[in-house]
Each structure stands twice: as C-alpha cells, then as structure tokens.
Length: 468
Image 1 (cartoon, rainbow, N blue to C red):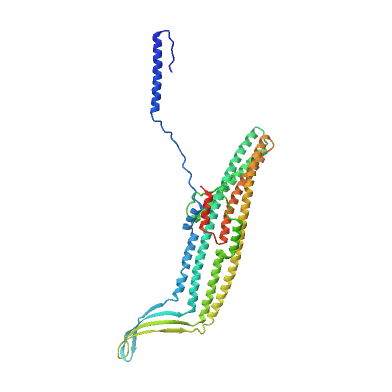
Image 2: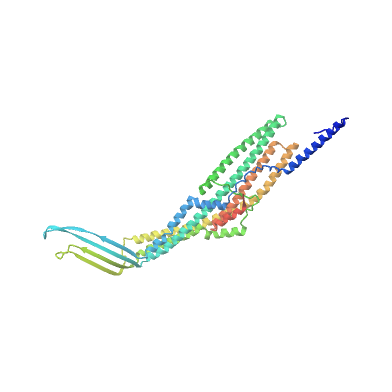
C-alpha cells in the first residue's frame, strides 16, 4: 500500500506521485491478468446415487428361475404329462420278436455214441387291439391325469406367488420396524442426555433420570431385536431366489392399498367354491377315480385282438431224413372271454369305488375350505383397510400429542416421563400403521388366490405402488 507523502520537497512530491501511479498500474494489470486467465473449476464431490430397489415382479422372476420347490413341481408336471402317451400305447400295435436257439445232445441205441443237433426258432408277432374296453377307459383316464398334472402345477405357481409376496412384504415391514426402532433409540438418547444435564443442575429428580435410562435400554434392545428379525426375513426370501437379496423397492407413503371394492370382494368369495385351484384339482381327481372304476369293471368283458405271426423253425434232427426248415405266416383274430379270476376283478372294482367315494368327500372338503379361506381373506382385507385408516388418524394425533407434551414440559405442566410416553406411542403407531398396510396387500392377494384368479399380473401391478 502506498501512502501519499506531502513532503515540502518538490522532488519528494514527484517521487510519491510516481510511486502511486506505479502501484495503480500494477494493480490494474494484475486485475486484467486475473480476468484473462481461466478460472480453476471448483472440484465437486458427489456421493454415488443409492442403489435402485427392485420391485416385486423382478423378485418373482428370480424365484421362478431358482426356487427348488417350484422346480420340483415343474418336474412332477412333466412326469404327469406322460400318462396320456402311456394310456394311448395300449391302443396301438404291439410288435414282438422272439428267437430261441437250442442245441441238443441225443444219446440213443439207434446211433452209436449218440448225436448232437441244433433246433432254432424265430418268430415275429404283431398284435392290434380291436375291442378292449379297459384300454378305452385308460385313455380317457390318461387325459384327465394330464389335466390334473397341469392343475397341480398351477397350484404350485400360485403358491410361489403367495410365498414371494409374503416374503417381500415381510422384509419391507421388518425394514420399517428397524427404522422405527433406530429413530426411537435416537430420541431416547437425546432424552437421556437432557435428563442427565437437568439432573446435574438439580431441576429434575433422580427418578426421571432412572426412567429415561430404562426407556433408553429398552429402545436399544428393541433395535437389536428388529435388526435380527430383518436378517431372518431376508434369509427366507433369499431361499426362494437362491442368491443374496438385492435392495428392495419400498411401499410409497401415499400408496393406496385398498385395491378391491366391496363388490369385487363379494364376487371373489362367491366364486371360491367353484373356481379355487384346490377345488379344480379335487374335481379332476374324482373324475380320474370314476374312470378307474370303468377300467376295473372292464376286466369282466371279452376282448378281441388282431394277431399276425411270422415264424421260422430250423431243426437238424428229423429222423433219417436229416434236418428240416419250417416257415409259417398267419393272421387272424383272437377272442378272449374272461370266465373266472378268483374274484380279483370284483375286488379291484370295489377298491376303485371306495377310492371314488373318498375323492368325492375330498372335493366337498376342498369346496368348503376354499369358501372359508376366501371369507377369512376378505376379513383380512376389510380389517386391514379399516385399521389403516384408523392408524393414519392415530398417527396424526400422536404427533400432535408429542408436540403438546414437549411444550408442556417447557412451561412446567408436563414431566419428562410424559414426553417419553408420547414418543414411544408415536413410534408404536408408525410401526402398526406400516404393518396394517402390508397386511391389507397380502390379504388382497390371498383373496384372489382363494378364488383361483391370482396371476403374475397381480404382483406386477403392485410395482406401481413401490418407490426406489
């Protein structure tokens, strides 16, 4: 910084002015250089974006590709589809070839020392069933058994949908419970610190500090239990997808969980006794049992087959003329009339009738159980919806109560114990509200499953309610 020196000497005055001009020139040059020089860009450090949570539909795809229980059901269905080709084979031609090589050693007084010779025979037989009532009933039964295998696979697929949705929402609920437990613990830590400072200055009794310490310890224990529960729920879902569980999309705070109108609920309950997959399986099982009766009764009926045979016999021992070769071809029909088998056919028929009666009773039980399951699921939807609405209002009231209690503590009309109670009530209400929302969604899926209408699209539609 240059100072103007008013020296009585003229030369000193000139030197001071010169120095001032020089200083101003240097300052202007520095400013111009600073404007011309490119400014260094500020270094911006941004945190990596949080991983995007995957939705329910993506978890379902992973489970369908990796769940061992569903894979076993798929293999069972593949085996069941072979029942029809096996039954149809009885109505197709049967071709059998036989070859019987023999070598004999004949010792006789006619030939000194005896002799050895070969006697070979070969035959080709073709049999075509013409009239076999048992085979006809077996073919009809095979078609029903294939249908039964497909229905059982559908039931396994529906069970997978329910298991995945329950597991998904169980994890979300456990995450919400852990978040509430952590927030509650943080609040209790603050309350404990405030109470400790107040105790040190003598404004609160020791009982308030003990109460705050006890609430803090309980909050720590609840946080540990919630963390363990979350890990347990994750393991269940990981078993379905056979890999570590990726981050899940969360249920939006404003998402509407009331997906079924009362009329839709009543219709699903009414359809359950006829459309539930368990009922369809029971109905098909009884039809299979009915065909088994026809197949067993057919043991009393005559059968007619078309039989063709080509035979070649070669015998080197044919008396004094040496060996002989015989070729024979024949075709004709073969009628078999069963007369008596020791009561075996009648016994097997009575056994089949008993199995049919058992299947009918199981069908009746399946219909009643389907109606009961649908009614219970409907109650779950209704109670979950009503509980969600009530807890939303209760949450607002709990937040208002906490604020009022905190102000009351400041003016001396409330105690710290009252604040602790209000905070605990707030976090409990938040936890119950989250659980009620998940309960409503799961009950909705259960109601559709009880009516036999649950499909992949129902789970994928729930992705619209989820957020990252």
